[in-house]
Image 1 (spheres, helix red, strand yellow):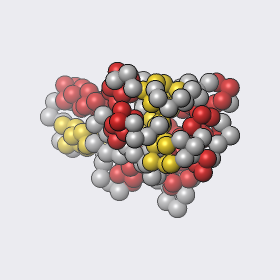
Image 2 (cartoon, one colour; image 1 turned 180 degrees about the vertical axis):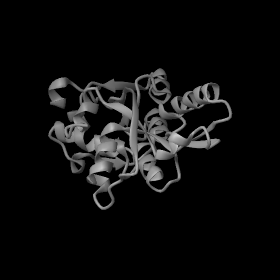
Image 3 (spheres, one colour; image 1 turned 90 degrees about the vertical axis):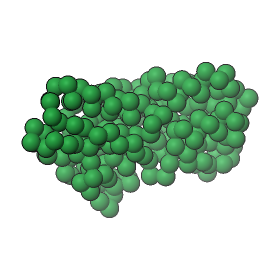
Image 4 (cartoon, helix red, strand yellow; image 1 turned 90 degrees about the horizontal axis):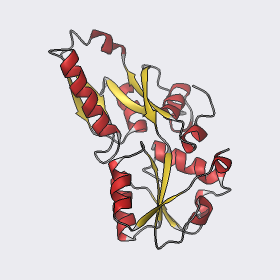
Length: 225
């Protein structure tokens, strides 16, 4: 994994990694495995459900239980603690965990290994139609959700703001909502914009846009670079 992975998310080339402890090798003797996914309204949860069904079909007698979670950062910590056998992570968060950077600076996580990549996971920015936000720079002075404290979305929010010459202090009000909460507050007009790090076509994005109350804020290649 390359160091400059954070901006890979911004331009939509980031892929999620599925990580596991070595116990996966013993799946045939271990009859029950647990996979940490993400929020129910996000992309990880249904993907994990699909993986669970594939395992059930291909490995008779082996069950995979899907657990909802706070997504990448929480999942890395669940693997580290032995509370999950498998987990879905953004590859930038996996990089930070392995190298002890950012939210993992005091406790690197090494008891995990990448198995395969799943899908591109771009940072997606939504704003209320009434906010007048047309670009990331327009979020200055606005009410913005940057994701839960310590989450991968929070890290990506800071990165995308910095790429546009902004800091957290430039926002009018900061909210730290999960994907579902951010969606609801955009629809209700309680916040002006929100950053989501989730797969293309995630239910939370589609549902928010279908209300007609939200718009997608473009992130250009030039901004990402």
